[in-house]
Image (cartoon, rainbow, N blue to C red):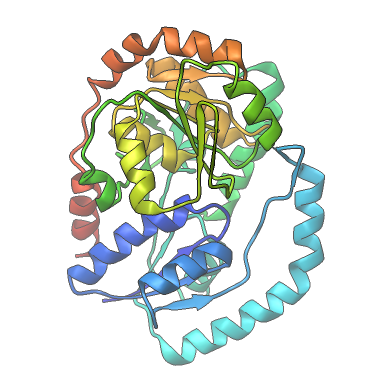
Length: 348
């Protein structure tokens, strides 16, 4: 079967998990062509040369380490016209060169509209639809309710009326709409095969906080060792080692950490849960999906949800590590077996 697969360029989590599914589809004999943008396009083009078309996609604008709603609107409005013209050209090229019989979208609009235009079956595989197609079992703070309503409306309107929705989630969620299946998160092969241990360091994956804030905070815990990725540095300062990104070394440090520190991105948190690493989560402001992930981490006892990175919060988190480790020990997931089994049945 010829399959068109759409992957958004905003955030690398979509790309890394889509790569796993695309590899599976190719291995069982399907012919897959991918459309993506930005960093995700570069990543996937290296993984699947000749199978990826670059398009123009949606992007968030950030200010003071939080999502700027106004900035995001203006950024995408400014580029809307030229991006539309560019994407129409890519659509015409695809229509000439590739004849998909099915479309899969990971919360990506170009592939969605391609499917609707050509009346093709459409499958959604992403984590975002949990906000729209499931019942959330968390307390949403008053200040987050507006962000929740906005996020839910965006998710609802992004890829409506798919033939089936696969929702990946590290927490259980009650399905409230038809043609919907909740699956465990998609796990990369390198994470599945990682050698898990518990050494004496905390891994921090961080791109939103300022370097000064990170340095000042971690220095206040001189008896702890930290390895920090995401800041494009290669140096050691006291008890903190900053490393440039290397997938092999990152996974080694990740799998051997006694705990992790991050914002609220779904892919990293899901992998931490899979590796049974307690999580200190401080979501990017005005990004409800991250707030939701952090709230569930707290609810399940897999870690703590904080509004910011601080020394006092870290001390509180570290004090409760045995409790988090005990709860994580009960988490079970057999790789990607559930998703792949149901996806193969659906494709038949």
